[in-house]
Length: 422
Ligand SMILES: Cc1cc2nc3c(=O)[nH]c(=O)nc-3n(C[C@H](O)[C@H](O)[C@H](O)COP(=O)(O)OP(=O)(O)OC[C@H]3O[C@@H](n4cnc5c(N)ncnc54)[C@H](O)[C@@H]3O)c2cc1C
Image 1 (tube, rainbow, N blue to C red):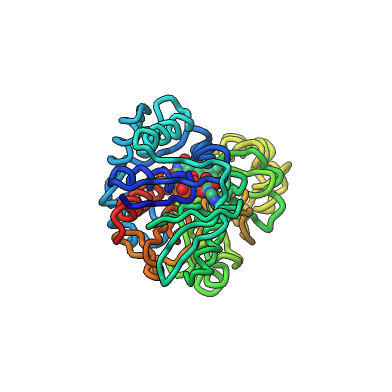
Image 2 (tube, helix red, strand yellow; image 1 turned 120 degrees about the horizontal axis):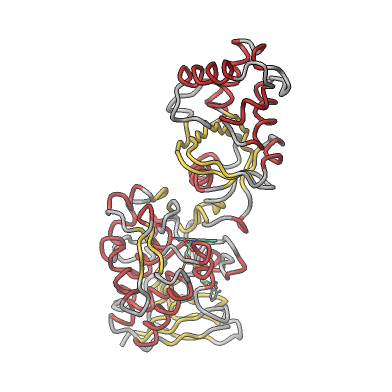
């Protein structure tokens, strides 16, 4: 019986332990927290968006970095396999809008319970409050782990599933990154992703708490935008949906997605974000609509007519951006002023200077280079018997259950192979 050690009792670690035990290994998990799945607990606002019920093509389309690396992992343990495993361990699931899969109970704790239950049935030994200090290797292969109390535990294979660097209070503090770097692995820059963006403009503060629905957001590389204007070269991300103004910047589903593409190639660079408040109307259609509204309210002040087009808290900001006095009677607004108003409504500009930090990031962009990991087994190409799974790897996806699916799939593949390690 192969002796397999799993470091980290998060999503990837639990799935790896289950797969390794099913494949016949003697599995021991070490977790530095006092309980399993602290990060899973906070996922999906406490409801845990376990996976997505989409097709394989859609799954890979939602992976932003290194999707091809995930082919074997996903095809050997896909979204349906995860649903089967969790449901067969006492946690029925349901599918919501956009294919997002949640526990029927709406409690992430039930997902954790199902996974810990499965580990128990398979006789996986789990040690909580047990921090691993280092991974020990001899002659190019793993031989054991060193616990923080100084003890060394011997084994045949190790699965490192210590997670990324976001929300470090859940235990993901980058310990695994450090061991793997020392063992010769390349670490691609770790950056916060799926994270709120911070703009240079101050006016967003006036809109704190405002959520916008059905808007279009376009993010551009500022340098290329200034050189080439709005074209394919300068465009980093474009999407329709919901966004939110907060006390520190902008957030919401559209902005989180935009942040992933920002982190991919443009991190640290200034970018231009344009918000189209009326994506369903062309410039001309919007002009007609304005002319009609102005005609019907000829003697009213500009601010009192704008209410039909934008939320009331936005009126002072829109008026300031298009340079029209809020109190001006609409019958004295010129064609030029109307054009400036349409430009603002169809493209509110914000200069993005950065993102919020890891403590507000849903995931970590970067991590262990996938070039040094065998995609068919998740084994390190540098050290025999060393397997790597989950967010520690340089792979990540958009919101919708895709990041947990990466953890489940890579964890499962690592577990299956670590159990039969030669
Ligand atoms: C607020 C928030 C909401 C999210 N919502 C969703 C969602 O709804 N759907 C989705 O798909 N994804 C979501 N994610 C992302 C998802 O949670 C992660 O991608 C996923 O949990 C990564 O799994 P992992 O096993 O690689 O790492 P983790 O879940 O972080 O697990 C790593 C574990 O390793 C342990 N560990 C670390 N170092 C040591 C050590 N030295 N010794 C022992 N143990 C150690 C940690 O304590 C931790 O328990 C969310 C993330 C956040 C922060």
